[in-house]
Length: 328
Image 1 (tube, one colour):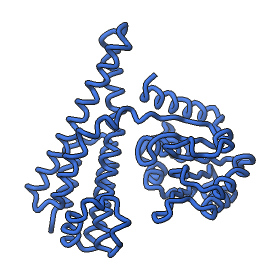
Image 2: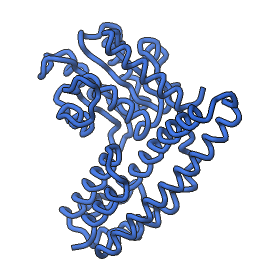
Image 3: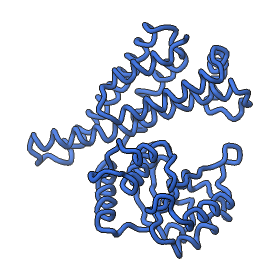
Image 4: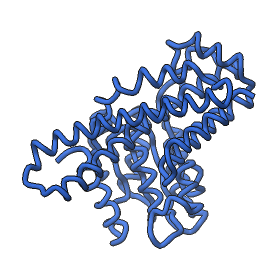
């Protein structure tokens, strides 16, 4: 069974558990904390907080708050930027919040991103809650290194393993062209914005073609008995699922870039930047921006990544976003 099948099976299990009232109180989700595992966790939480009958709808206030990590009954914690550790006091704060009354009268949830960054004290602080969880609470531990967690934590959680689905094999297709786009930011005018939008669209089209070829090769080897119509359905489903994972990586890199520019504009020291190897380009772009325009660029990239998940043509999304990013 390939990574996409694992993802689909895990999601179906979660939906069945939710609908039957048999969800576990804690899950370890193994995958990319900024990619497929994060998206899975957000979808999981939308089941709890979606306001529509058909869950998750991805449109109601509850779903949008989950996407923005701003839902009042969910607490997110992640490693501090300097120590790259999740401290015991952060875990205790999460536990205290989960033992209090829900603001909206339903589920209370906590998410620990990069849970492998918990230190020994943090993990020990978490154990008691895992042993005696409060009612109507859900804890999600997201990590790409489950082996780094205490065995006693793993044993008290349901474990969901999400394969990267071959997205890393696509890196050589998109990473260098994407960096060329980022190095040329921001667009100088509307025509330049349209050009950059076309480059990003072409980049993702090449990725999709590469994924489709890889999936077809897998199907030729493993599913020879499938009829043509079913083969087409499986090909499309697997290709789109893997493409979403690569898209998450692409937009993460774009967002990290714009955040680096914002940090430079705000006077943050260079050793806290993610793309420090591109310091010259980052500094050039920081000189163009004000703090307000740099923050707006971060928000525009965030909005672009969210809109791609909706039923809107990619080119329309990219063109509108790059025009908003163009120099004024």
